[in-house]
Length: 125
Image (cartoon, rainbow, N blue to C red; front, top):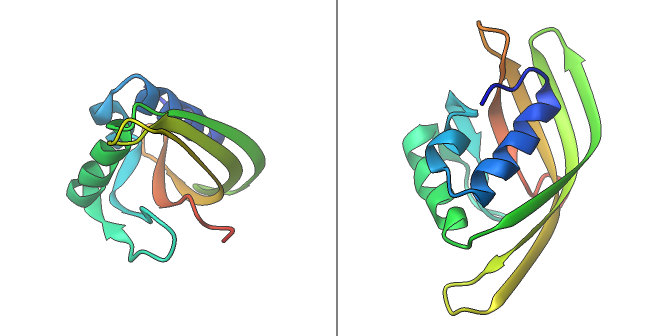
């Protein structure tokens, strides 16, 4: 999975979550990334904390549907603003529907691919 443009990271991430590919989803994050797992939560730092949070999302058997609204790039840094919906199954078996607008910061890697540096799915709230 190689993201050749900032928006690619978002679509590759959605596919990895849907297909239960935790390692592929985690590979889209930078080693020093931060992730906001829920509204008002403290940021999670680093891949170990992010892995644990993503495992919880994958357990929902989610379908994450992103709608890219805006990409702004300045050299090796980019922001991606996208609306998203997530449909899945809660631990109690009930249908789950979440939505939000994400404000993400990405960084170009030495190989030219892009990685998530700041993942804030609740960025517009």
